Amino acid sequence: MRATVQWCLVGWLVIAAVSGLRAATAGSFTVATVNLENYLIEPSGTRAAKPEASRDQVVRTLVSIGPDVLALQEIGPGGALDDLHRRLRAAGLDLPHRELVGGWDTNIFVAVLSRFPFLARRSHSNDSFLLDGRRLHAGRGVVEVDVAVNVRTRFTLFAAHLKSKRPVGRFDETALREAEARLLREHVDAAFRRDPNAAVVVCGDFNDHKDSRTLRLLRSKGPVALADTRPAERDGGPVSSRRNTASSRRAVWTHFYAAEDTFARFDYILLSRAMASRWRPGGSYVHASPDWGLASDHRPVVCEFSLSE
Image (cartoon, rainbow, N blue to C red):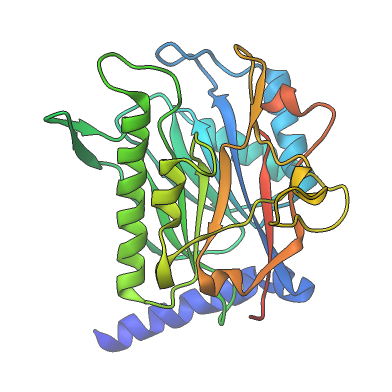
């Protein structure tokens, strides 16, 4: 039995090495996240099917980025991920490894497409929490996969879509979102218990601002803290973390809310210390294009990582 497990691991690592050849040649790889705004191929619940022109623009956007690992929010049921995968492959972006996770909301899902294979899958589709004395279920699932970039480079990816800012019935939307963030953080902490030096990426649509309790819960403190990458539009140089400087005022927004005519940063890529040691700020950005709004009300966030620490 032990020999069988060892040979299976060797097989996985060989596959990872072959799949990682492109990244190894370049010396880096990219992780991107984007909310696709109802990528449905047919109506589901109150959500309409995504128009053909919008789906085409999604593909053009993603192909222009060319990510190696792609986290997706608002993927619909009934073959929507298959539809997107087929279109991307036809356009030259082949991401053969996938994970699709649902939650209490059966109309939209969270997914990951990857050029690299997954060595482990620990995704979460049935999370629940207590709020005001009632047991509630998280609206969307959480993807958790171990990604093998090559034989020597691996990381754990979490992809999530937290509660939106839209009011819902008797419960406060902020309290719901914070409860979901606490659940996500518990999954991240479990990864650190398995390996205190784990290379971790936590990304997705968190529907809140950087100084909110939601983001404070996710970032945490101490040796298990996660760093906020905060990329900006590609107009030259990495973004400074200092306040009141020209660089800190660059365009980092990722979401447009038409009802209030507001722009905000709701989409994040957070990194553990081990993963931050590989991060290349100069190759990280918020994707901007003239037709971004045809694809979605969100813009993709992209981070580049070195194969060496």
